[in-house]
Amino acid sequence: MAVPGAAPDGGTLIFDAVLTPQRSLSPAAARAVVVLFALMCFAVGCGFYAIGAWPVMGFMGLEVVLLWGAFRLSARSGRLVETLELTAEVLTVRRFQPSGTTREWRFQPHWLKVEVDDPGSPERRITLRSHGRRLDIGGFLTDDERASLVAALRAALARLHCVPAPAR
Image 1: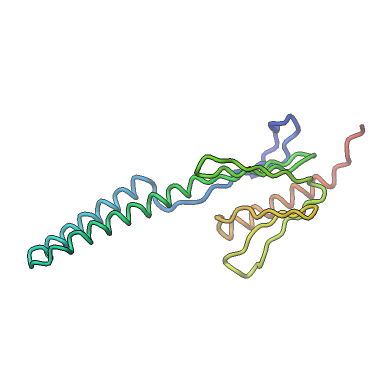
Image 2 (image 1 turned 30 degrees about the vertical axis):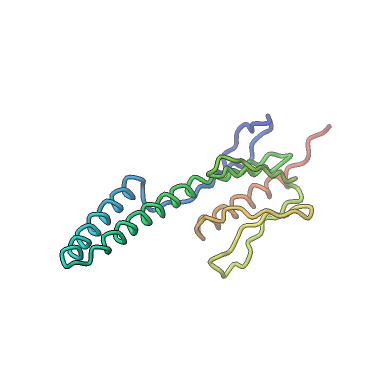
């Protein structure tokens, strides 16, 4: 996750991470699941139609549409991206929403605390705190990914705290 290099603002990049949600199915696999489900529903619906229960066909079609919609919503939410860029002067967090909007937060790294809320809970969050402000990040990460991110970010901040400030 940590990649030293040049930051967009011209400073030296100490830490850089791009966080994205993991999706278990590719778009092609999701289409295949919906098609197989549609074929199964069609077969079952034909059986009900043959015995005179024709309204069941409509409900089977509705189930296929709802499954397709659920996969579409899941794929859309999977386009969320969070980036973290740490320089000696600032930690910049950008959140790119699936809707196309972008939000940005800046924290002074020398006062920044990286906390993990409720370590025993599956709903735990990574929280950045500084000067009375707080921001939850990586809500979609797995426990292992959260632990890795927290360790890497804390290590980068520790390295930054050990470096003397440049002379002005």
